[in-house]
Length: 122
View 1 (cartoon, rainbow, N blue to C red):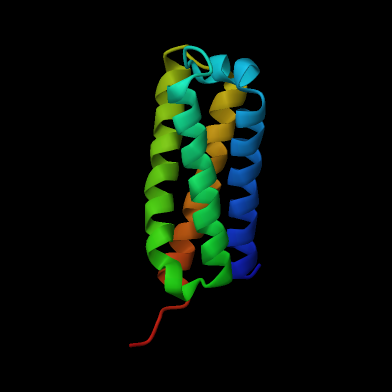
View 2 (cartoon, rainbow, N blue to C red):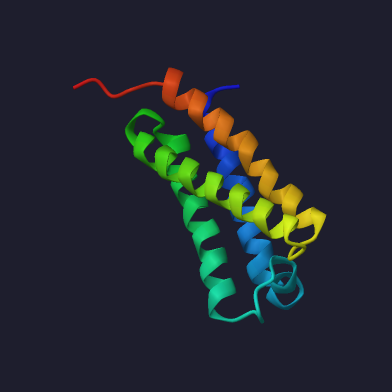
């Protein structure tokens, strides 16, 4: 799989999940243990959409957007850690936990990109 395809898939994943969650906040906010579908939930989903846009930019120019990949990795590690903590505490369901663990697949692929992927020459 090429780097452009990887980041296009990451963009689609984030945009689809963020978009679906914004489209049905009343149904999905409780799964994330967010009280109501107000500002905290909207802020979380806006972040997902923002990362989706960043991954789309990276799909277009992988070498020129390596910084976005670093930020995305940090975000995905944080999401997986938070999902684990919340699942262990009984705050979220397994399905929510599993969605967060999917981010670890992207973390591994992003790390591979940062190690082996293209770099800008100066």
